[in-house]
Amino acid sequence: MTEQEVFDKVVNHLLKQNKKAAKFPNPYRSECMYKNSEGLKCAVGCLIPDDKYQPYMENMRSDEILNEIGLEKLNINFIDELQKTHDHFMVREWGERLKHIAEKFNLVYRAK
Image 1: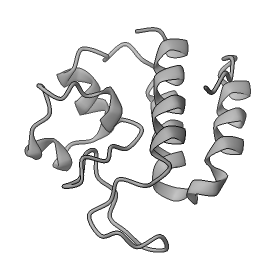
Image 2 (image 1 turned 180 degrees about the vertical axis):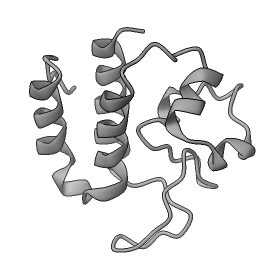
Image 3 (image 1 turned 120 degrees about the vertical axis):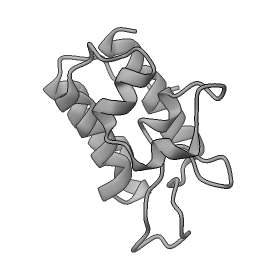
Image 4 (image 1 turned 90 degrees about the horizontal axis):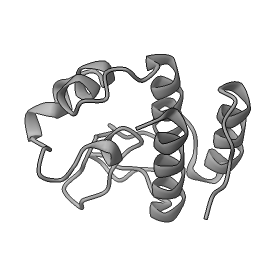
């Protein structure tokens, strides 16, 4: 996948889901997960095919996840920015934050 394809997938996933993937459903303090018990996924979690996801992945760094799923050539700074959007910003801030990431990495923001 190209960075644009990854970006489109993450943007559409996060904005459609409109909720954090967390261990504890608290909007102010929660432990984010790649995939939680409700099936919600974070920015990196939505890149993991369902048939490849394993609970042990919750203890892995983003770059390790990318290696596991064959996306190791992606810019880790780009992936970290997407992940930070999910983990450190409120859901209502995601749209603006994702637009900023598009500008920073010369991508097109085209949320559906």
